[in-house]
Each structure stands twice: as structure tokens, then as C-alpha cells.
Amino acid sequence: MHGTEADGSRSTDFCKYCYDHGDFTAKGMTMDEFIEATAPMEAKALGVSLDEAVSLMATLLPHLKRWREVAENEDAYGEEVRAAYGDEVMDAANEKYVAMGEAAHLQAGELALAINEQLRRAMETGDPAGPEARKLVAMHGHWLRMYWPDGLYTPEAHKGLADGYVSDERFRAYYEKVAPGAAQFLRDAIHACA
View (cartoon, helix red, strand yellow):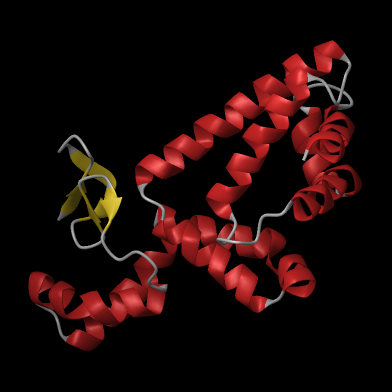
């Protein structure tokens, strides 16, 4: 019951009910809405009762990549984001993440790697307001828009997040893998160029 990738090959991560030709079929649905919509098909395909299908899906879905990553992000940052921006913003971000197709997830991952490389290049110049830094900030802003709910991005919000990169050990550690002082440089570049 495997779904298919964009090239028609079999997906190793998703079933045909939720993933077809490299894209999710139920964009914008919560896990509960997805279970409700697909449990009858699952029950028929497996030859089990509707209640058994709902129970099985409620047990399995949280472990699938698509839903697991949302839960991990919620566990790591949800309380802080909800306190700072409200439930609606966090729920909208989770919905946007779930709705992203596999191609968009791959693109975001590749962009994250490119941002780190551009951060190295910009740091080599020593100028957090120079052309390499401006390119870095533009790339980083694009990456944020891939995950943030529509309309949330502003230069001020970008700068506020950048301040968190320096003050929050989790983010500082992530960027310090690029180079010593990388979190501070990125923060300074965002403040200068966003």
C-alpha cells in the first residue's frame, strides 16, 4: 500500500492514502481529521472493523515521518512559541509543515545546508552588512517563509528570531557547528540586512 514519489517510484515512508506522486494528498488536515477521512478505506483494505482501523492508525501515524517531525518540533519549541506568539501561530506552522510535500521538505533541507555554507562565506568577509551577508539574510528569510505561516514574516520578526539564536543555547550550538561566532555573526547580519 505504498505511495509513490514524483518519479513514480515507490515511497518507503508513506502509504498510497496519504502520499501520491511526491505530494501529500490531505494537505492542511490534522492527524485526527486524516484518520477520520481515511479509516474507512483502511478498514476495508485490511479487513478489520472501523474502530480497529482508527485504533491502528492512531497508534501508527504518530511514528510516521510527517507527523513525528511535527511532534518533535512541538516538544522542543511548542511551549515557547505558543507563549510568545499564541496557539494560532503554532497550529498554523504545524499545519503548513504537514501540508508540505516531500519535494518542499527536500528543498528546505538543501536550503538549510546552503545557508550554512553562505554563513561561512559571509563570515570570511568579516562584514555582517556586506554583499555576502545580504545574500545570507535573503536565503535565511526565504527558509523561514517556507515554515512560518503566511503573513507572519516581517523584518522585525526575523530580527527577534535572530536575537534568540544568540541567547538560546540550542540555536547557538547549531550555528556554532558552522564556525565559532557564527550565531552572533548571523544575528548581526540579520539586524543589518533584514
